[in-house]
Image 1 (cartoon, rainbow, N blue to C red):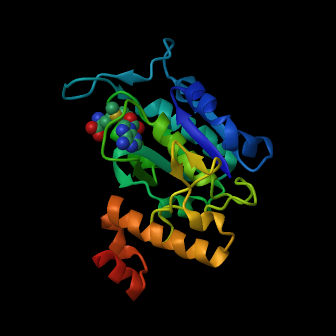
Image 2: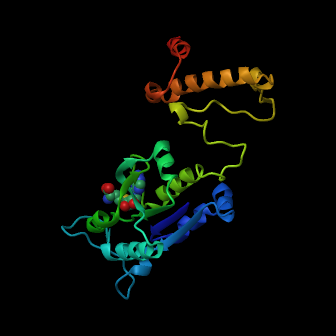
Image 3: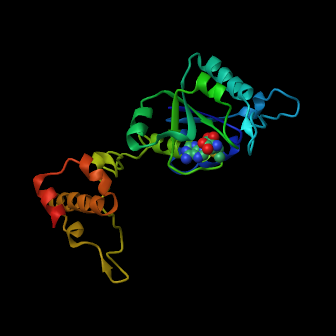
Length: 239
Ligand code: SAM
């Protein structure tokens, strides 16, 4: 998987992603993350890439020329027109199922806005996907791009170690994951549930499934209509 992040703040993206699981996956060659500085494509000697909005109003707008220049150089280098995701609070809200779709791609381009956003004309020319990470407004698209890269990368084969699987996690089957415990057995007088110490895998699985259902009903009841619940589980929720 190759990620190409078009940004005015390349160091922010690189510093944030070159650590822990994602950093190790990059070292192993499973992922490649490059940050392309849009300012390198500025069209004036002061290297300015933003200007006042036509029609007036607060803030600055990123000019179309440098964004298009950065995109054009990248697509020439790749020899194709890759999928371009514009991070914007106006886009489709990112989800685990969207991450699964993106994880199938070979190259993904993330276009990060800043200030009041980017001139609409260049968006119309190059953007294929408009994606938001939630209904709130941030100062730039860099953190959203990093959130998406982190999430998509966990689904790339080999990124998570063999014994860790993304398959049974929260949102899989529209259920939240069961609660997790580790040593010690007793912490501030609170014991680990007995069933987890029993060594009986069948009972552990049953308990975990039940906890997933209960937890989803408690924290995210909006997910339940999409979950595949047994009659017994539906009964359990009525009690
Ligand atoms: N004026 C824009 C509007 O009202 O839609 C908001 C611009 S925001 C201050 C600056 C940049 O941050 C955006 O161009 C976008 O790239 C990024 N951004 C802000 N919130 C975001 C979110 N929830 N999801 C994805 N990107 C976001």
